[in-house]
Image 1 (cartoon, rainbow, N blue to C red):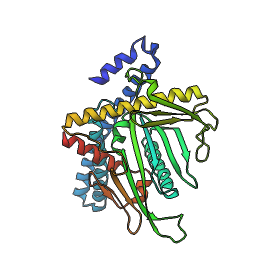
Image 2: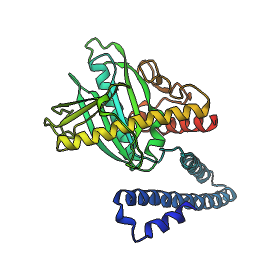
Image 3: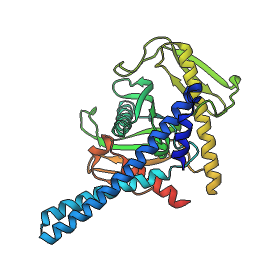
Image 4: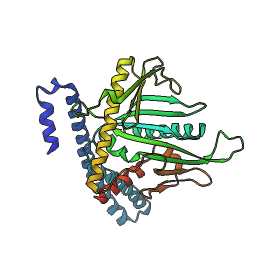
Length: 338
């Protein structure tokens, strides 16, 4: 049993000889212990509700029966999420995740939409007790963000979020249009795993262009506004990564290199997955043509995933971070396809 193995590893006297490895093992151990505890609590709740339901039916208490049925439905949803999480067995599923948001063409409209998406994912992460770290922000010309990168830290962060890569489309009455016309905006999201030093990704520095610039960010609360920001462009792939939250140019450069390695590692993971499934490219073109989800606020309210057909009319809840419906549907569809 993995938990017993982790108990032995974390009890070893040499555990803290490698602090990074120790933290990783302890994080996995804590996550598994929480899963086991949750499973036991679910079993206890199910037994208690079943017994209570029998008593309520005998007494003819319909109101209590209805309340128990509601609780059982909530328990079913919670159990389903636990079942899906147990299937996150990909090579990097358990890792932390970098999440990038880029505004599409359309100026202020698209930049505002990019900021709305960043807020949505940050809220989701916080609701699930993940830690959110801001890595890079480039503020919009009038409002919103041209681009932003956050790091979401916690067990299975990448596994849950990896299906969010692609183009997200918003339809709404523009708050920036004095004529109150309906606008369509696009923003792209890219999710890739944080990797540790044990994974060796070779990068030829001659294939990269390194630029330094003055950091800037919306509101300024997350960003260290100095000349220490670093941007690395990997010329063969066109990948661009930036970091501007560290105190020194050296620290930002080191963080940017790690992000670039993570992006290249993610590309390799996608290739392996595509080969395993016998298709050319499991993720498709991550350009503007690869639309994965539509968010319609006017003339009606609907968020619909174009891959799984999952949808909801509760657009406010979705934009406030309640995206589990879509994450679960994406994971379930991938498991079902295997």
